[in-house]
Length: 133
Image (tube, rainbow, N blue to C red):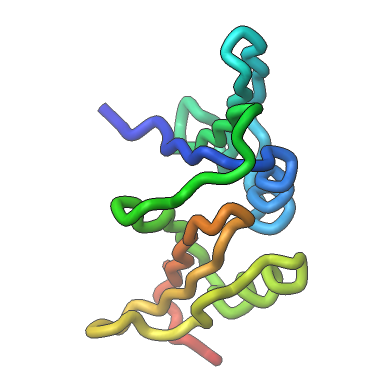
């Protein structure tokens, strides 16, 4: 068994696709409209679905915004250079809501960005090299 995907409902699919592909560097893997259900599914990720867990973006055509709720926490992405990644995200118009630094009560270096719908994405420094910044 393995985790296949995580699904987020988004209010503006094109805006979300731009964020996940242009700002976070994912690839659009597949996209399909379902006219009888009035929704579109788009799958994005860093690798092929047969090998990696991906993100499903669901756009219900009649809904432009969602309340995120209190149960959802965040998505997490491992990065080699958290400072460079945050700078690149900000340069592309992404919103860094927590600058890189050690997590509370620990030493792992993390940062948070926010997608256009308000979902939080945690960036986690994965390289073992010391934080040079």
